[in-house]
Image 1 (spheres, rainbow, N blue to C red):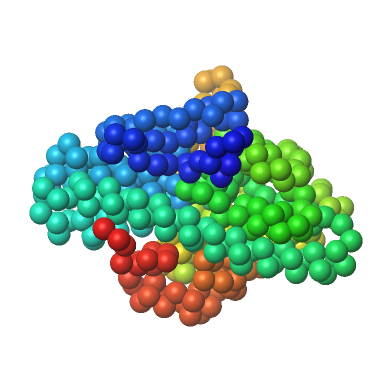
Image 2: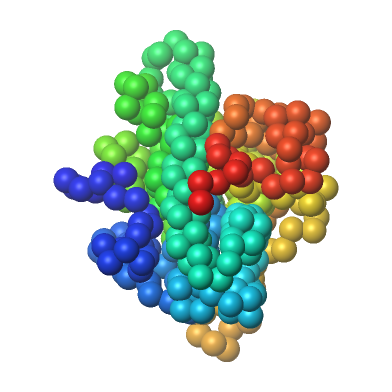
Length: 360
Ligand code: MRU
């Protein structure tokens, strides 16, 4: 992603060869602040406090966290405690467990003295894989935007509504839901994005910022505006991300996604979900058992004496999802279609994007 005259990923190895650099998203959009992480506690803190956030980025950051832990102590006990610490940081995005399972599977067998270096290489490979996965989602999703544009007779910009931030900042680069938008814009397809503000954390302002860096026309709207916009014919398609997609195509994403899907359904607006395989939880038949993170009521900025509930995610049932956009193509949100596209996942092994063996 280009910011001004520099290209950035959201996470990268430090120039000392071992620390990990992140963009501190709690400072955005006011300031672009880069932060160096040097131990696993700092990594856990960065995930919990949402300095890094977004399902794919959480997974890659956790992989780097294990590498930092193993650099301090490559023994089994330290390995176990790093995995436990990181696994407990955020409950809904399954990419976290997916990434830690992959690190466990590929690094545990190494002799302790080789573990840290192998874990760094694996984390870097997972970061590269994520970029490639998002690039492919961008290609497939661009096709959907192009189809919509053609169906409008190329008469005006395609109006797209998105919720939360499923962009570059939520991944290593490109984003999931925003990758098709960037590609469409670059290909000369006129687009305009309605950006939900996404209270209480205002991830929509991150989306606004990154779309702005790329020159994509956009307008921020309040979270409750989407239904009105759809009913008055001002949305051609919705495109959102996912933190956990279950076997049947149910989708857990940022709180409020479900209401947008209901409004889209009622108004005949296509509702697409950009879903990398790293977000598919093959162990869950449907969204009923997805753990929904509840965050502190203080995020609402209200005084402590006001009773508050702050669920951070909700589940959109597959029947409201028009299609899932994966790195292997566009697919119906259904168990047979997902299983046909990812046979290795549905058999119980963990799908892992382009390089299923890793490069460590
Ligand atoms: O709480 P966050 O900001 O981590 O939630 C992010 C989202 O809900 C995104 O839509 C999701 O992670 C998909 S990101 C490609």
